[in-house]
Length: 209
Image 1 (cartoon, rainbow, N blue to C red):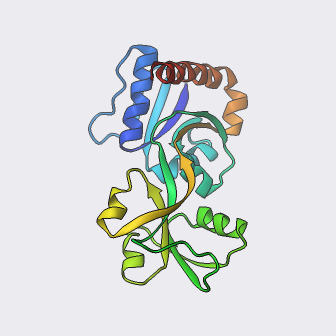
Image 2: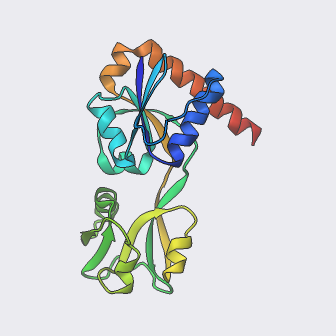
């Protein structure tokens, strides 16, 4: 049996739909249940930020999680496959009309993605003060807490509604199938089998576009 960690919400639903396509069966969590057992799989429903942690500590053999979360956490897991879902960008946002000036002194950046932000500015040899926030990040430039934000952007609507605009994209993210390193060795046949089956579904979807 393979244990699969899924993030709550849309990604879990989309992943289970892939399994339904592969196996021709119904995969659905009962109301409020966090575990779904089938003859071949045990699915765990966890917070998005915890998926890679479950996989890294081998509480799950494989999992599905966004590349942005993987890059932020930096956990040593195997990235098996880009699922071409949940596509978004990690971007820098500033108040409308303001331009990104990396020569400006004392730059303050608000973000929940501290490591991605830190790497981006370090690669440009720019010293910034990173302020970690857990939500409502768009508020930071409006009230003067920060000069800019680094956040996940899908449509940009939230930024626009709050008087901000994207001034630069840092990275593109999508959901990835990941595996625990030990599980990949101990259960290699099973892991590769599900990898190949999912890959076939993704390829067929891409060819149909």
